[in-house]
Length: 273
Image 1 (cartoon, helix red, strand yellow):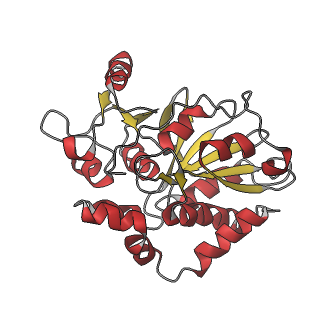
Image 2: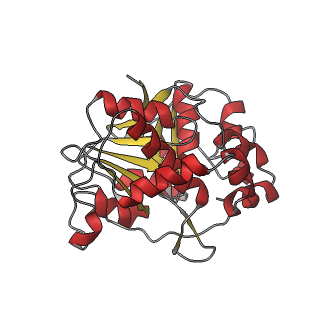
Image 3: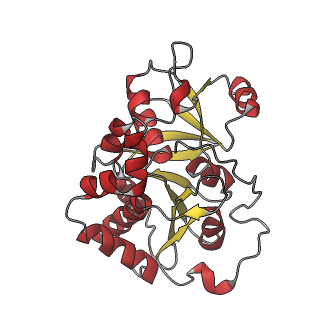
């Protein structure tokens, strides 16, 4: 988002050594939903795949960029180390929304990415979705959003995932309260998680956890998803900052037919089936 929060540099990893209580893991369910990096560490282990949801704006930007043919490298921090990382991978570096210029035309803004010149490789720092995606190890990671939720669900179901034996973990990134590392549950990510969960159920996935079932029901019961996101706290923040176009793009349903999958540290577009 717009504010500059220094996120704690967590070393938590799905499948790593972080200790989370057993009751938090949503064991036995085919679809699981949780919040943030800690939630990923709770429900990711044992999952067939992890879907990261950061509607405003990381996963939406990944969907737009990879759909245009760009390979996207997630990176946790927007600092000097990001430039070093980009140089190491022979990639362009996305800058802050307000830093965009002729020499740096790429940013976390989906609208800016759509207007920017094509680049084959892009490093996309983000304190929320990118941090979660980069921290997951051992299982496939998918960048999900409202623009591609049906395609993501189709890709997962084509592999037989979304059952108690091969569960899907959906992680809503959320935002952070300004000046703190405290996660703020964000409506847009809850609806994005619900959209993927609902699409999975429509395609035959089974046994959603209560969290996943409620997220899916929330999405289905929202009569005008774009209006809800435009009026929610995150949507208002971006609009007040002059980035209403980002909110509009991120609120489009089923606009992207491909699926960004993290392969050897970078998101690449994959066909939905």
